Image (cartoon, rainbow, N blue to C red; front, side, top):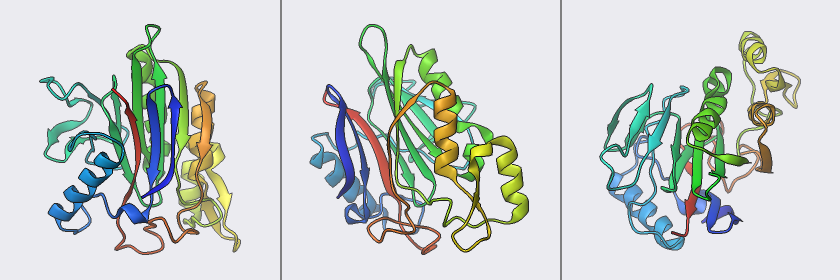
Length: 245
């Protein structure tokens, strides 16, 4: 069910699921009832009540949504994002003061973040860093929102995603993205233009003073992970962050 899972701070956990957990996305043509059942099984596995993880409607942008408590009337107060729907806020990143968060991917970079206020209150974050998101700064935007909520000592976990040796793109696209984030410039293993989105994500995190604690493997090179490049009809796995409380 999990590709990687660990307690990253006392009472704070980070995990990335694998294909064994099944598709967790509602937008890929899967039966919604099956998707919700898998999400509930995942929550039960980590000791959370059904419906605890907040998901979002990801659109390859850089909008960040703040997620309050489940009983908070502003539980999906989107920042420069559309109104929340049944699937969560329309955004590509979320920040919370402890509410469990989930980000879904199948080649894009899932970035999971955890910090705490000076008083010890956890501040959690997730970002969906695909090509447009990396280029438009979704990661720096997420960090800015976390710090606005008082987060200090932010650490990051980069989940499995397609590597620069496998992600082939047109030459012009490589040039455009690398102009914004130079670390993304890559060449595939067969000698064509590529983009290294995990390297770009790492560069943005480190430039903002964030330590990267973990970086996952290539999705295309691992059969236990979903990869859109490998199969456009694939599902989505998730990056997760939650607390014991």
